[in-house]
Image (cartoon, rainbow, N blue to C red; front, side, top):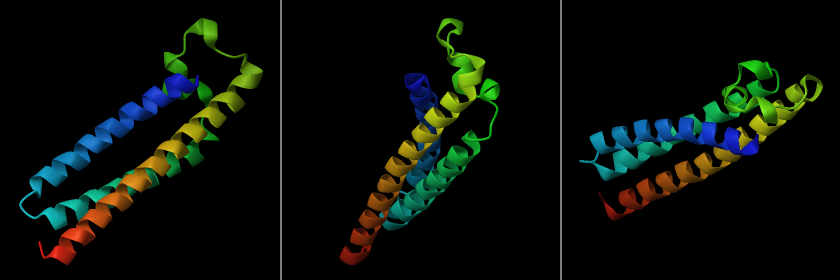
Length: 119
């Protein structure tokens, strides 16, 4: 279950990162502004991941993408499934939110360095 939740959240974050990258490429004529926008959009992605982590606790496990990708042989019993899927998805979302925050902070630091050197 962890591997599948990791893959589904990773794919969603990949699409978000692609959108952030496209915005940054569009602003590449001003590197400081591109990294500021990238940091801000990446922090927005982290906020969405935190929201999804909170939502995972109450969302019906049968309606999650992770549950749809689980082979029927590996699905846990119904009495245990809600707790297990909610816990695993919450941990996965929060892990990706932490990594995304670190990326956003590093983008803002790069933007600060561009500002200091005068670009």
